[in-house]
Image (tube, rainbow, N blue to C red; front, side):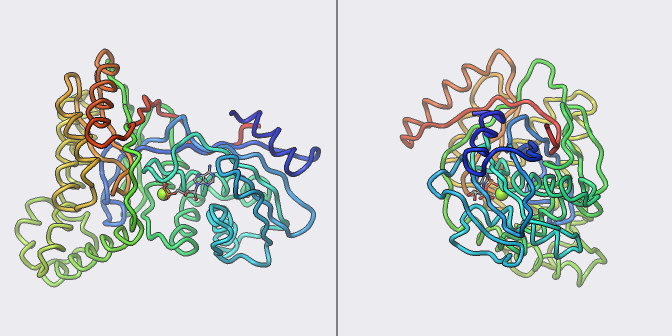
Length: 389
Ligand code: ADP
Ligand code: MG
């Protein structure tokens, strides 16, 4: 499948003719800085060359028709500009419909309905942000068709708002920002406190970014995610009784040592410890990368995993097994869980000539232990969401 074939599918479903346009939004992988976005810290994601394609056309009436070539069994979902509510029967289409709703809610005028067929080549629900890809993709389509004049940052914020308010996942801004603002061969060093950012060149000379999909996704992902947010917020509230901060991202490790005892609950303490340390690791990791010190970058990735596993408790047995196996493979510079957690993917930096052995050793060990076939993606860093044709 590719975007040309998607256009054929679009025409089969919705008919030929008119102003048919094609768009792409990438998935993303976060190199370091996990669960720091909603804690006012830094993240360091990059957009991928894999992602989600859309073929779309405006309609004359107020009807919205959506089709995903990834979820054929659901068929065409039909809604209307006059009925933008989240419904179970809308299935995956709640994501694009949420973006339409969010744009209108934020004051944009969507003058008519539209038809859109999508197809993605990123795994869904695996921590590579297929949901943000779909949201920013929809925003990009509507921005272009209806001349909304939104910047890419605004489209990222609209995507986040729709996921928070329409789809009930209280995600931070990282995913949508990376998908909207990605730049080929660069990762984005984003300060989530004020959305200031810098691109950092990721020229991993002699090494590749390898993503491993564990193929497991433990249930309660969204509720556990929302729990982590609440626990972090509780820790912040306790800290605010002793120091004048507005986010956990403002604290250094030393300041956390000094004030941390103000956090009453032991679980909340560990959540905050992760948020503070992970933010500091992310700052150091970007410095290391800028100095071409990839070894230090890798060590910080490893430390990030330990902290996510032990303090933030968002990993799981299968992913821990993958990461620990990856650490033992020669030529692995660093490896960690990536994404929201509770399953999904790992991200590793692996020396070029070690990649084949990495896949073999990790794949075999995982199969033996869990009888699951891990999937590997050796990825390239690509540009953000855009119109293709
Ligand atoms: P992640 O963002 O890590 O991939 P989420 O659970 O947040 O995982 O989002 C996955 C959901 O996004 C899917 O279950 C589906 O509803 C929707 N989605 C993403 N990409 C597509 C697609 N190409 N077609 C249909 N739905 C999609
Ligand atoms: Mg998601």
